[in-house]
Image (cartoon, rainbow, N blue to C red; front, side, top):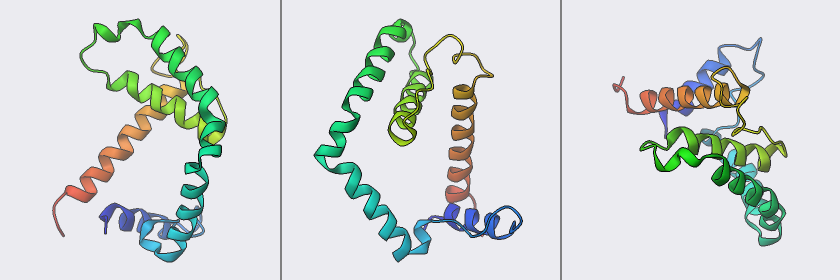
Length: 134
């Protein structure tokens, strides 16, 4: 069991004025598995994968053509974070964030803020899972 799932569940349950449940987490067992299986099955069928090929190809082409500094940069994490964010939004929300545009490359842009929030959340998860055992 990942401790961050339990921490997230406790956080939500301690705030009933904001959340109506502890959330759908792997610690919920069968219900979580039922929903995950339904989504996983529908996203892995070849006919469904084909639905995303055009958008994915367009995003990858934009990434490759608008990020010429990649060869000079030794750390690609920022560029890859933007690419993964753009791909995720295209597939999950059918939205284009234009993460590679000059506007979105600014620190106060939506995509920059989403990337920052994701990195913060991931670091909290790692700290919770790998921190001192209580």
